[in-house]
Image 1 (cartoon, rainbow, N blue to C red):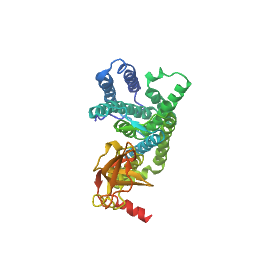
Image 2 (cartoon, rainbow, N blue to C red; image 1 turned 60 degrees about the horizontal axis):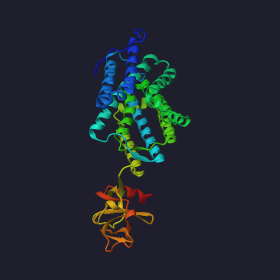
Image 3 (cartoon, rainbow, N blue to C red; image 1 turned 90 degrees about the vertical axis):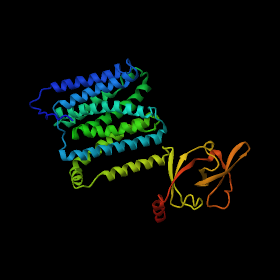
Image 4 (cartoon, helix red, strand yellow; image 1 turned 60 degrees about the vertical axis):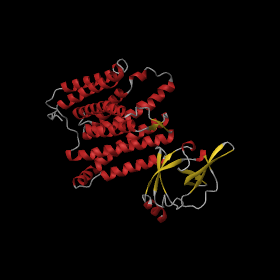
Length: 391
């Protein structure tokens, strides 16, 4: 990284800011009105936009630096607060999916497609947050209450897709656009600008980068539900903003001291990721889900305390020999298919536990099959059983 001198406000002209703003607006207009709409294909949609934003990044690396408000020893805790805000944003996405349902991601799922999307969006994201951090700490270091809303509004306007504005017709379309685009963007930009004010471009890049990466890497995304999107997309960043404000002003020194003393925050990060994964599994987001074996009916193949990974499957996707999961009364049973039959034109499966001497009494209708076991993790669920017994 190029080391630039620190900018002194009382000695520096506004030429850097003028060039910066012109470069930012030029990159934005080219990206929205020229590249893609007029120059299609790989060059117009990906290569030229990436190069344009990359040139802006190079310029920002060469001009004098502007220090953020947070002291150097407090920068790492600010970055962790940005991660915390991203976790809140991810939980909001999960909640939105719970309200509106999940659907397949519309983005390219090929490895090359994912890489191209991340590089292109990464250039835009890094350049934007570097510009934001430079401007907020250059002009509003001593006036954050004025600068944060002002710059948040400016970057919100930049984020509005110009091509979409011309398609808005009628009050309902305008209302949905304001709810799903304007309000969430403004809320997120308030948080990003505050993070940039405290810690420079890095925490803003961390927060926004995590959410963008999750959006483009996840195979599924919440379905469009504009009310849920408006509510959660607006409230989640505001919650993060309030949390960062409170923790920074009250506990930032304590957090920094713990980090300097070697008390890592990786444990908290791991706990947060684990909680998110558990939520995803519990909501049936993934095609795979874990279950703990609590009976001996499948011994010796599966023992009490083992964890089985069950792949979501229909009755047409299983066959004799598979271990399937199906409902029985208020339970979900995991037994092996030993035979199949057809009754009144409908397929049914005969099941039996590997540890049972007799077959199950009632055949399982094909439509009742919920999944099949793909692997067994020995003893991984013993702690869960002990906690359940204790409670």
